[in-house]
Amino acid sequence: MERSLTHIALFAALIAILGVIPPITLAFGVPITAQSLGVMLAGTVLGARRGFLATLLFVVLVAAGLPLLAGGRGGLGVFASPTVGFVVGFPFAALVAGWVVERTSLPLGLAAGAGAVIGGIGVLYVFGLTGLAMVLDKTLGEAAFLVGAFLPGDIVKAVLAGFVTVSLARMRPGSVLSRS
Image 1 (cartoon, rainbow, N blue to C red):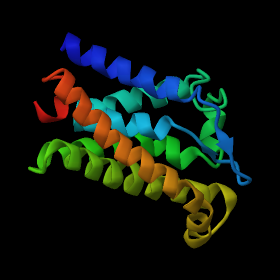
Image 2: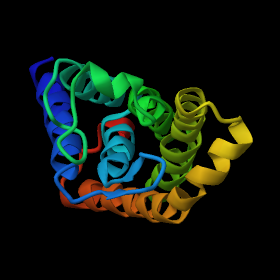
Image 3: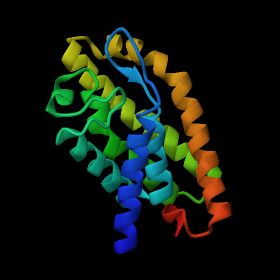
Image 4: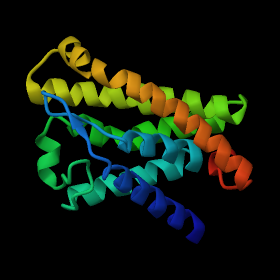
């Protein structure tokens, strides 16, 4: 139990640290950040339940007003901004990424890459597009067109999540909780 709490807190901190990398804010108000890589890793390394809890902790801390999102954003105002769907989607993206790694018999690297793509891109985009469309009063198609700029970078992050997950498993067997 204590070890799980430590892992959850560490991954919430990792997502916050990845927000320090300067974001590239697009014209419609959603920044390109490294934080989605942290969400992917939370799922692929910690597994579905712990990854969900780590990202949920991060979202709760943001809602409480801590400036943990890229660009130093935080507080309830985030939930009325174009990024609302992405922020709300973080826990569900990690949940699905972890679930894929836990439930597939693929080699760890492929499972982590697939989990990162399905959860960290697919699920996150469903939430992100929905929030973006609602806040900007756009159709889902228009929102998808706007978010298309994220896709190449997110694919790179998903591949990186697969490599990092495998590297952790090789360096410290048992550290990848999604497969233990």
